[in-house]
Image (tube, rainbow, N blue to C red):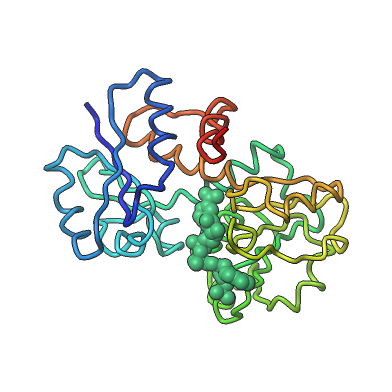
Length: 279
Ligand code: NAP
């Protein structure tokens, strides 16, 4: 039986076991995907013992993503650029390899929701709100997908500036006050801050500045319809919610560990939604 895990501290809240459990059952694979709670002091020992415990790999979440980056035997190019690892697997030579699937997960969700032409909307630019760990993955994903330019706006400007080094010709940093200059031409606006999350203040953005073909995406998925998404819908704009990124980022890991590529289907979405919003 193939075993995979999600490791974090705490870990009880993770929806990943539901996602992978759904695919294991759907594809009839004899395997397991287990939650493992490991405190930071024991994380290195946990990685060393993976083979011994029969694990073929797994997911890494808060607070271990940077430690996994430092401890993996090797890194995929995108994990190296993002600076954090959320997926571990053994490569063909047995080396523990760290990947980051948030970038392709976000992009796959946009492609599935909007069709493949979305990078041509507006003047081809994207505005990323926020400059934390998720923003870094999303900027890498947007650059790799061929978006013409990415404007990163963050409350703390220095954090946005640190993302410019990813591609100084295509990435620029600005403060919240500078948004008025970039919003009117942008084809995509993505909220990667925690604003709009249940229990947090909502994101206050003047959507009247956006062009009619702009897409508004939010990676917050609790609630699924954030105030930003609701306001964009009211304005008649195309919107993309945060649940799809969570589902799509799980695909590459499952394929590595269990040898079959799973699909993000409406049935999976409904299953996870019913857990997020119990009837
Ligand atoms: P993080 O590294 O802590 O970054 C948080 C970001 O939010 C920073 O840019 C921070 O700005 C900004 N922020 C926080 N409070 C703010 C406020 N009051 N006003 C303005 N900006 C504020 O967190 P993260 O890991 O990037 O995650 C961010 C969000 O994405 C979370 O809600 C998380 O649940 C969600 N997420 C979703 C997925 C998915 O699969 N859908 C995946 C990963 C993360 P400063 O730099 O100025 O502090």
